[in-house]
Length: 192
Image (tube, rainbow, N blue to C red):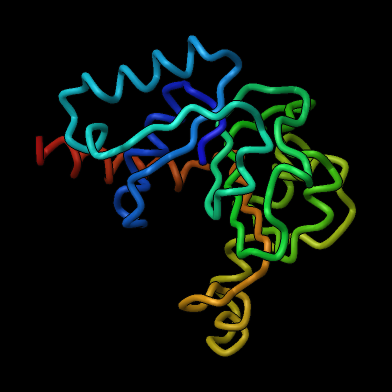
Protein backbone atom coordinates (compact mmCIF):
# COMPACT_ATOMS: atom_id res chain seq x y z
CA UNK A 1 0.00 0.00 0.00
CA UNK A 2 1.03 3.60 -0.56
CA UNK A 3 -0.33 6.56 1.38
CA UNK A 4 0.41 9.70 -0.59
CA UNK A 5 0.46 10.55 -4.28
CA UNK A 6 3.44 12.86 -4.56
CA UNK A 7 6.78 12.66 -6.31
CA UNK A 8 8.10 10.92 -3.19
CA UNK A 9 5.43 8.22 -3.58
CA UNK A 10 6.36 7.83 -7.24
CA UNK A 11 10.02 7.24 -6.38
CA UNK A 12 9.14 4.89 -3.55
CA UNK A 13 7.24 2.72 -6.04
CA UNK A 14 10.00 2.89 -8.63
CA UNK A 15 12.58 1.69 -6.13
CA UNK A 16 10.26 -0.95 -4.69
CA UNK A 17 10.45 -2.73 -8.06
CA UNK A 18 13.98 -3.70 -7.04
CA UNK A 19 13.03 -5.24 -3.70
CA UNK A 20 9.63 -6.92 -4.14
CA UNK A 21 8.01 -8.97 -6.91
CA UNK A 22 4.61 -7.43 -6.06
CA UNK A 23 3.34 -5.01 -8.69
CA UNK A 24 -0.06 -4.20 -7.18
CA UNK A 25 -0.44 -1.16 -4.96
CA UNK A 26 -3.35 0.14 -2.94
CA UNK A 27 -3.20 3.95 -3.05
CA UNK A 28 -4.66 6.42 -0.59
CA UNK A 29 -4.39 10.15 -1.15
CA UNK A 30 -6.07 13.26 0.23
CA UNK A 31 -8.65 13.09 -2.54
CA UNK A 32 -9.87 10.61 -5.13
CA UNK A 33 -8.92 13.15 -7.81
CA UNK A 34 -5.25 13.27 -6.73
CA UNK A 35 -5.16 9.46 -6.50
CA UNK A 36 -6.59 9.19 -10.02
CA UNK A 37 -4.04 11.71 -11.34
CA UNK A 38 -1.25 9.64 -9.76
CA UNK A 39 -2.60 6.44 -11.32
CA UNK A 40 -2.93 8.16 -14.71
CA UNK A 41 0.62 9.49 -14.40
CA UNK A 42 1.93 5.96 -13.88
CA UNK A 43 -0.14 4.59 -16.78
CA UNK A 44 1.07 7.25 -19.22
CA UNK A 45 4.69 7.35 -18.06
CA UNK A 46 7.62 6.63 -20.34
CA UNK A 47 9.43 5.03 -17.41
CA UNK A 48 9.08 1.21 -17.52
CA UNK A 49 9.19 1.08 -13.72
CA UNK A 50 5.98 3.14 -13.56
CA UNK A 51 4.17 1.00 -16.11
CA UNK A 52 4.76 -2.12 -14.05
CA UNK A 53 2.35 -1.03 -11.31
CA UNK A 54 -1.34 -1.89 -11.11
CA UNK A 55 -2.94 0.78 -8.92
CA UNK A 56 -6.13 0.32 -6.89
CA UNK A 57 -7.49 3.46 -5.26
CA UNK A 58 -8.40 2.92 -1.60
CA UNK A 59 -11.74 4.01 -0.19
CA UNK A 60 -10.09 4.82 3.14
CA UNK A 61 -7.30 3.91 5.56
CA UNK A 62 -9.05 0.73 6.75
CA UNK A 63 -8.51 -0.78 3.28
CA UNK A 64 -4.86 -1.19 4.29
CA UNK A 65 -5.76 -4.20 6.43
CA UNK A 66 -5.19 -6.12 3.16
CA UNK A 67 -1.58 -4.94 2.84
CA UNK A 68 1.59 -6.47 4.21
CA UNK A 69 3.90 -3.72 2.94
CA UNK A 70 2.83 -0.11 3.45
CA UNK A 71 4.69 3.09 2.62
CA UNK A 72 3.57 6.48 3.87
CA UNK A 73 4.83 9.47 1.91
CA UNK A 74 2.72 12.45 2.95
CA UNK A 75 3.19 15.89 4.46
CA UNK A 76 0.60 15.17 7.14
CA UNK A 77 0.71 16.68 10.59
CA UNK A 78 -2.00 14.27 11.77
CA UNK A 79 -1.84 10.46 11.67
CA UNK A 80 -3.11 8.95 8.42
CA UNK A 81 -2.96 5.32 9.62
CA UNK A 82 -4.14 3.96 12.94
CA UNK A 83 -3.91 0.61 14.65
CA UNK A 84 -7.26 -0.52 13.20
CA UNK A 85 -6.05 0.23 9.66
CA UNK A 86 -3.44 -2.54 9.56
CA UNK A 87 -3.51 -6.28 10.18
CA UNK A 88 -1.60 -6.65 13.42
CA UNK A 89 -0.07 -10.13 13.67
CA UNK A 90 0.01 -10.64 9.90
CA UNK A 91 3.63 -9.68 9.20
CA UNK A 92 2.95 -6.06 8.23
CA UNK A 93 5.88 -3.76 7.53
CA UNK A 94 5.44 0.01 7.35
CA UNK A 95 8.02 2.40 5.94
CA UNK A 96 7.25 5.95 7.02
CA UNK A 97 8.86 8.56 4.79
CA UNK A 98 6.87 11.75 5.27
CA UNK A 99 7.56 12.79 8.87
CA UNK A 100 10.68 14.87 8.33
CA UNK A 101 10.02 17.97 10.41
CA UNK A 102 8.83 18.72 13.94
CA UNK A 103 5.09 18.17 14.18
CA UNK A 104 4.75 15.98 11.09
CA UNK A 105 3.23 12.57 11.86
CA UNK A 106 1.80 9.85 9.64
CA UNK A 107 1.22 7.02 12.12
CA UNK A 108 -1.02 7.04 15.16
CA UNK A 109 0.99 6.75 18.39
CA UNK A 110 -0.97 3.59 19.31
CA UNK A 111 0.13 1.96 16.04
CA UNK A 112 3.75 2.91 16.71
CA UNK A 113 3.54 1.55 20.26
CA UNK A 114 2.12 -1.79 19.08
CA UNK A 115 4.92 -2.45 16.58
CA UNK A 116 7.13 -5.41 17.46
CA UNK A 117 10.20 -3.72 15.98
CA UNK A 118 10.84 -0.03 15.28
CA UNK A 119 13.89 0.95 13.23
CA UNK A 120 15.05 4.33 11.99
CA UNK A 121 17.84 5.78 9.88
CA UNK A 122 18.98 8.26 12.54
CA UNK A 123 17.69 7.99 16.12
CA UNK A 124 18.19 11.62 17.07
CA UNK A 125 16.43 12.85 13.93
CA UNK A 126 13.63 10.32 14.22
CA UNK A 127 12.85 11.33 17.79
CA UNK A 128 13.03 15.09 17.09
CA UNK A 129 11.50 15.36 13.60
CA UNK A 130 10.63 11.87 12.44
CA UNK A 131 7.85 9.38 13.03
CA UNK A 132 9.03 8.51 16.53
CA UNK A 133 8.57 12.05 17.92
CA UNK A 134 7.17 11.74 21.43
CA UNK A 135 7.59 7.95 21.53
CA UNK A 136 9.51 6.80 24.58
CA UNK A 137 9.80 3.10 23.72
CA UNK A 138 12.58 1.16 22.06
CA UNK A 139 13.74 2.26 18.61
CA UNK A 140 16.73 0.68 16.93
CA UNK A 141 18.95 2.75 14.67
CA UNK A 142 19.73 0.92 11.42
CA UNK A 143 23.51 1.33 11.90
CA UNK A 144 23.24 -0.47 15.25
CA UNK A 145 21.24 -3.26 13.64
CA UNK A 146 23.78 -3.70 10.86
CA UNK A 147 26.65 -3.87 13.37
CA UNK A 148 25.10 -6.58 15.54
CA UNK A 149 26.65 -10.05 15.45
CA UNK A 150 25.11 -12.10 12.62
CA UNK A 151 23.13 -14.35 14.98
CA UNK A 152 21.51 -11.37 16.75
CA UNK A 153 20.87 -9.56 13.47
CA UNK A 154 19.20 -12.68 12.02
CA UNK A 155 16.75 -12.76 14.94
CA UNK A 156 15.62 -9.21 14.16
CA UNK A 157 15.46 -9.42 10.37
CA UNK A 158 12.50 -10.95 8.59
CA UNK A 159 12.76 -14.61 7.73
CA UNK A 160 11.49 -16.31 4.61
CA UNK A 161 7.81 -16.30 5.55
CA UNK A 162 5.75 -16.96 8.61
CA UNK A 163 7.00 -13.80 10.34
CA UNK A 164 3.92 -12.31 11.98
CA UNK A 165 5.63 -9.26 13.52
CA UNK A 166 4.58 -5.73 12.74
CA UNK A 167 7.64 -3.63 11.94
CA UNK A 168 8.09 0.07 11.26
CA UNK A 169 11.01 1.80 9.59
CA UNK A 170 11.13 5.58 9.85
CA UNK A 171 13.34 7.44 7.45
CA UNK A 172 13.68 11.14 8.08
CA UNK A 173 16.42 11.38 5.47
CA UNK A 174 20.19 11.37 5.84
CA UNK A 175 22.89 12.14 3.26
CA UNK A 176 24.04 8.54 2.75
CA UNK A 177 20.50 7.60 1.71
CA UNK A 178 20.42 10.44 -0.78
CA UNK A 179 23.66 9.15 -2.30
CA UNK A 180 22.37 5.57 -2.50
CA UNK A 181 19.11 6.75 -4.08
CA UNK A 182 21.01 8.88 -6.60
CA UNK A 183 23.03 5.81 -7.58
CA UNK A 184 19.87 3.70 -8.08
CA UNK A 185 18.23 6.49 -10.07
CA UNK A 186 21.28 6.78 -12.30
CA UNK A 187 21.23 3.04 -12.91
CA UNK A 188 17.49 3.11 -13.67
CA UNK A 189 17.82 6.04 -16.06
CA UNK A 190 20.66 4.32 -17.90
CA UNK A 191 18.25 1.47 -18.70
CA UNK A 192 15.65 3.75 -20.30
